[in-house]
Image (cartoon, rainbow, N blue to C red; front, side, top):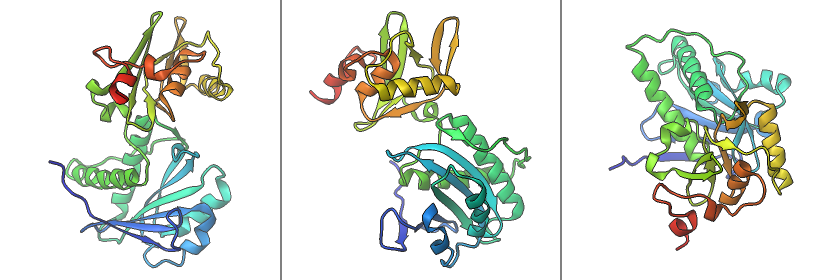
Length: 276
């Protein structure tokens, strides 16, 4: 049975999408969610000047991360002033801060390196860090780093952001597929969003009837998220769509009914699994 979690959340300006702090029961770490336009207002909050790590996020309309940058801070939110001047892409910061007893300087550096590495591994979004800093984590300290990262991952998930790789979270039995003319596509559906998984083959010979999805395919091809080898185009990241049909069109081109195209390992359509 999964363990229950208790969170305390403060909405500083009374708005669910405004400045807020989040703390898990008995944790020494406080998380702060700061929309970029409210950066100056957030500086007035007590405790937001502690040290730790932070994520700068470029968020799409559907609450999905498009770009991300991870850094460390020794003076809390003041570190974001530099990024406010020098980085244009982000619209929200999420900070994980604690006092010096919890976050020593070595701990912060190790945690920063670990979280950047996890971001690159996830292949979910564009990571704006140009390199993954090399920092040796002592084997006796690694469990603590992993424990803090698990807390970060949990808090981020409560805000609607997935950090981990799709391959780490997908149960093989839940994977849906399309097999047509030698093409194989893979995805998962949670009843709301449909995620096309890394390794899906994409039919680029057929243009999508949806101009928006066709632009998305061409952009993915240009930035290397779709690559061609031996005449086959393969998706190198996982991409989330608002509907099964949009996901099917991305993989197959043309116009497709995803409720019929996507099937489970037993050949049942998504329509039969979720609608009947």
